[in-house]
Length: 377
Ligand SMILES: Nc1ncnc2c1ncn2[C@@H]1O[C@H](COP(=O)(O)OP(=O)(O)OP(=O)(O)O)[C@@H](O)[C@H]1O
Ligand SMILES: [Mg+2]
Image 1 (cartoon, rainbow, N blue to C red):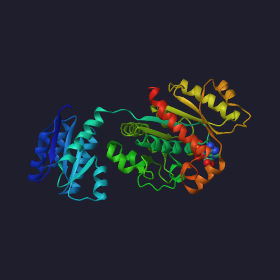
Image 2: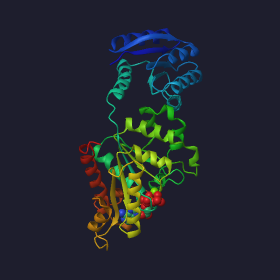
Image 3: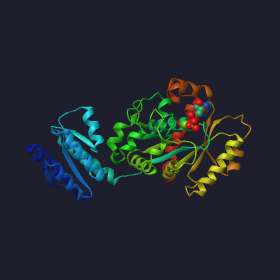
Image 4: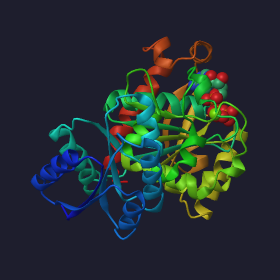
């Protein structure tokens, strides 16, 4: 581990001494300075590219949070650990908003302190980028949201790893309504706080679904102008998520807007949803060409046929010939199960886990898990 310099902000001599003694025992971490003056701390940290900043929140909390906010906004690479006498969610959320990545309770437990520092080292050295799959189509109503949600859940269940579901339908996102969610934080909030997107911040503010390892970032439940969201902020958000989650599943809106294009570019796979009607397939063909022309590339686009029926006039072989591409997956048609799930506000597998659609989503998740790393994306 490269030498990580630490600045401690506290008014308590005993806290300072304790932390200095802990730091002395950690390899690759050194004590640089201590202060109880906010301006001095901010100025000292400006000089450092990468540092650890430990802030004691037990006195003048607002002032200290304000200082942390300034430091994290100026340089997101500085890891800030808070110390607090209180153990309440309010302090925790306020701390996260100010860019503090972790809050430790006073009296400080040595192992917890060491673990908090190690998390920084791990997240910097491991950094295997989470696999990102965008669910896309240039036609509305083809089953993108159903796919994004059920695939994300099945991936979380079969891999047990942290999976994120991101709703990028800026104006009329369906994710929250599909599963009756009422998330405390939504995408607008994340984008407003895009300098603070640490692991802890995301894991504590995204909506964790029903005791699984699926974390959902939904859209605001009201119309919000998409113009206020910049491409840069979307890029920041997705790349921060890629550092934390093993899989990121993105439900997109129809069309080739610049935000969606950015997300497609950042994706490892694009699941292109279509049905087998001729107009839908022609549209699909045009979209594949467009992906090629824009440089995003059609190789990472995989075709998913939704609402597939054996009795369809157009056969899979015909589709493959027309698109000059193998079909990646087929989701069977099952109007009743899909409707029941939407009406009850639950995933498909909660309605009937042995139904053809539930199995298809589950097997797709297993297929993705087995193939995505082998493909070495
Ligand atoms: N495999 C399926 N079998 C039957 N019905 C389905 C299937 N997949 C999706 N549907 C139904 O099709 C409708 C549209 O699905 P969904 O909202 O997922 O599509 P979408 O592409 O996200 O739409 P939009 O473009 O409006 O965002 C929903 O009523 C859904 O229940
Ligand atoms: Mg949708």
